[in-house]
Length: 480
Ligand SMILES: [Zn+2]
Image (cartoon, rainbow, N blue to C red; front, side, top):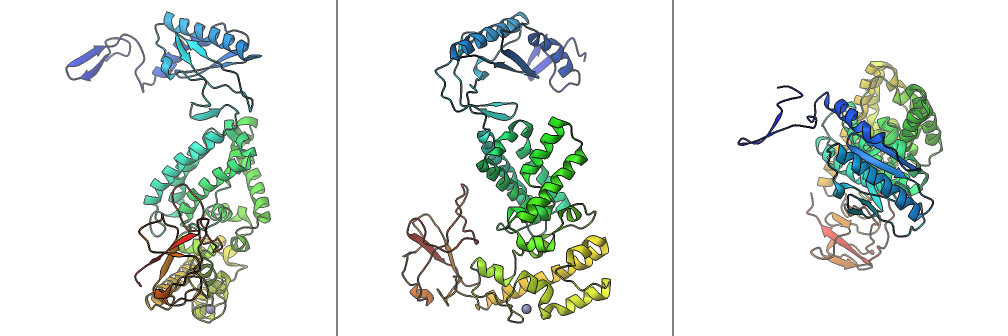
């Protein structure tokens, strides 16, 4: 079939339409031919203060005015010229798809209305142009909120193919997560000014954190800072800065990245979060630039300290006291990995294989040295964590850790799960009442929760406190 003549569209098998104009969608020559034609509109004379910007068939009229009347006059003149050019060239304009926004900052503009081909256009508060939501005040808060919500959807979809245990390796996970990241960062050269507002930074980073937690197979309590370092992905706001530097100042990619790493390292040294991770990985660059070594569920537990460790389980209210199941000392991540004598035989194994006795100060350094050392130490961590998980399950089954409430509240009985529930269905108790069925005598207290739009998750990190409604719900769960 010829590109220029005899083209037809098959609407249904019996309904075929001859095509006399236009370029076929998806053809190689199409965009160039279209640009040759459409270039005409950009060459039209425009009133002072009006500029036309076009991308493919999307045309934007940017107009400036001293006041509302001035603006309306300028814009309408420009619109009329565009319309008549389109008509001369037998192109149709979708008036109903035409949108306007007044970029007035925080000021409240007087009523303004534009016209094109008889159709009236009322300015909106936010419009979407080439994938970016532009709002009246150019804060781009709307843009961030909307893309974050969209990225959340992608993350949920990705979570299904990236379970914490098993699933693809961390490098492949990183690749998949890149989809959500690029969605989040799209157009940041335009909206990066939004990050001057702390609220927007929080929106950006918390969405990014969820992506990274999937890559690291981390518990949802993991801090943003730890997730970033473990996965080797810089904070989203630094990624934005990096892109802006590259595209707007022409800085080279490697230069921009080394700036990012420096800033990241600075932040890492100053943050009050992720203390345990920082003790293990003080130097980000060495860790990030390694050529070998994938992370997984167990390694992430060891690196974050959020996992099967007495202190952590106690903090999230899963067990009553933090002492080690094997030796009775306080079970911190450091204790499990480096001190508990119960695991000395495993340390001995490591010693025999690579002549290294695992310690807090050398673990990561040795792992980074060679793929062999990484494997041996990774296996060492994995063995410890699996043994502890097994022990945890045994203890749970034996009913030793019953009454899943903080110390001194409920001491025995079936496992209790506390959480907010929509009032109804679940048995409820008032604050201060005892739980006779569970043999408890203390007061019931309630966990606080983070407010997220999706769920009412109880976050383990918060202090147990009286809830805003004065009611909590306690639900029995059959003993495991
Ligand atoms: Zn111990």
